Amino acid sequence: MIRLPCLNCLLQKSYRPFVATFVLLFGAAAFAQTQEPKFKVIALAEANSIHRPFVDAAKVWLAKEAIAGNFSIDYIQNTEKIDAAFLSRYQLFIQLDYPPYGWTPAAASAFQKYVEEGRGGWIGFHHATLLGEFDGYPMWNWFSNFMGGIRFKDYIASFATAKVNVEDQTHPVMRGLGASFEIEREEWYTYDRSPRPNVRVLASVDEKTYVPDSPLKMGDHPVVWTNEHVKARNVYIFMGHRGEHFQNQAFTTLFRNSIFWAANR
Image: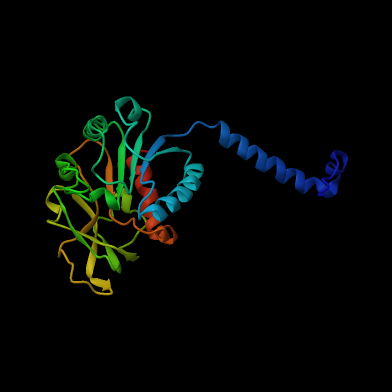
């Protein structure tokens, strides 16, 4: 059995550093519990899919970021709760590897207004551009236009490591990322066209750097962009298949920057 020192002993000189540390930690924890969050985040996250490891790693990372950045985060696994009243409680919507189909009509309508009218910010990852006819659902044309008028075409199923070139170093989302960074083992999507004519491209993958090489290439291949034709601050980040991305400082910097910019904080 562990014996704790008595109160009188704690007040002795030899225990004063212990007391000071305890008071400091307890005080910081109490402050963190009573402080109001700067903003609230809702994350729509796939519950059971091939992307589950990414979602699980994201939740661990986001829990730490929420404490450090003083924001709160809630999670939902489907769109049944989403309507205008639900979304009004949140300043940022993160689509954490959740596809753009199978949403309830109420959720789709509320989300569209949330984005078009700038009621909150949005960050989408990876699976958010799986646009087309999938699992018996039709194409969500509004979401396709939101993403630059694209349709999913193919992907590198065998995965490839590649260099991502930062095209707009002045944008807050790309702060601290330099001219380029590397992403390991991602299943780079290709689309029927580049979204560039309809969005502001922030970064693109250099297809010449694929390791191993792949015949699936677009030529102009944006992977991070924002649509400035809507009022909401929004960022799409293609990378998001593997939980190991959260060990990549460039990826976490990109995600962190996106959170505070999209939430307008």
